[in-house]
Length: 127
Image (tube, rainbow, N blue to C red; front, top):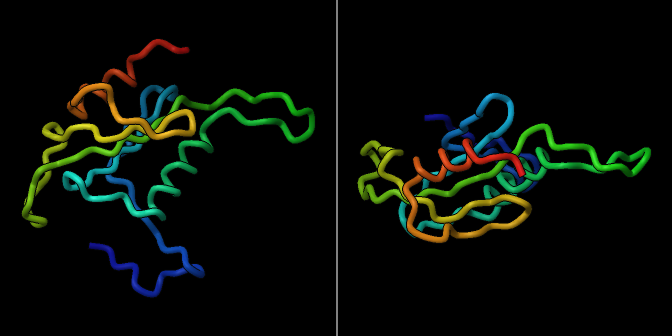
C-alpha cells in the first residue's frame, strides 16, 4: 500500500490506474476497476480523460495542421463484483461499464466482458 497523505498540489492529489495494455506501439488501453456501481471520482475521471486526449491528434501551434496521434487510445471502466475489499479481483471476470474514446464516455452496446472489449479494441482495424 502506498500512502499519499500530505502529497498535495493545491487541491490536486495523485490518482492511480489499475491496468495499462499497450499493443505494438499502436494502441493503448487504460483500465480502471470499480466495484459494480461505485463511481469514478471527478479527479480520477478528469485525469483519465486528459491522459487519453493527450494521446490523440493535435494541432501544430505554428502551422495549425493536424498532427497524427502517436497511438489510438481509450480508457475502460470495468465493474467487478467482489464485496470483500481484501479479496483479489480477477480481471477476466470483470465487465465493461464505460469506454472513453474520441472525447466522450459511452457504455458498451451490450454487457461485455472486459477481456473481450480490450481484445476487440486492440485488434480492430485502423479507422
